[in-house]
Length: 349
Image (cartoon, rainbow, N blue to C red):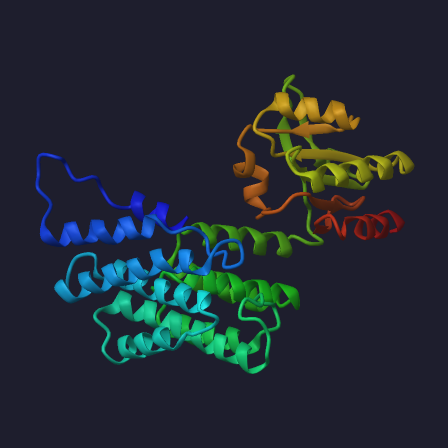
């Protein structure tokens, strides 16, 4: 993935114009990076995985030695540190060369962006050391309860607010705040991110998710036009509880969940259900609804994950169920694991 993105970011050089020496070296770096596959140390021979990374490392260092102030310097530094990390991982956790290079860049940064990169990898190295000290695998997932990592993220964001890693780190902090229900911290993070990354996709997503959580106990509705031209507005269903179900036929978890919701609906005739379907076309949606025996009204705008309602409320997983009470106010929303309890509680009130 990173290789493809890097390749796409480099404009093609017209064949009629010869490559400059630094462009030629940069092409060599890209070719080495393009050859990499995802790190899977147990699926193939380790040496076969190490070789292309060592080649990438060699070429990045040739470029940096020849053109320390070259136009691709910061991108080459990023690839160099990434290669050192992957070599360390494939070599059983031998991260000393990565740590040494990171410290060198922190002492003598070749530029602001390279400094951001080194500071990011310093956080990674520190976490690797903590994990190793507790005898856990170095690939242990980052959880919401990693206070040392989150504190490092906060310091990084404060020190390097324009770094490309800020949106990623902010997302981790936002999710941690969500896990403990800290709306004030979520607001602070979204406001901070908006100052430097106003149009960034992460900013828009976190803003929408914050909006969703702040909407609880407030009027909530969905209005749209069906394929046959009927106007639907769930606000007109006040007096009856409503489930707005964001789902997709391409997701097995969604299919299982909507079957459960259909059975639940049949047991509660007072309940209204409407689907927000993320399949690529109404035809696919209609076929899936027929296969699953769904008779609810469905909204599909043909935009898939870019569906207007899904974007407005920051939905990034399916199924996702919004539960609206008889007053027309949002009780809450949940994925497949929590909608039933939320719906039962709403029906009882």
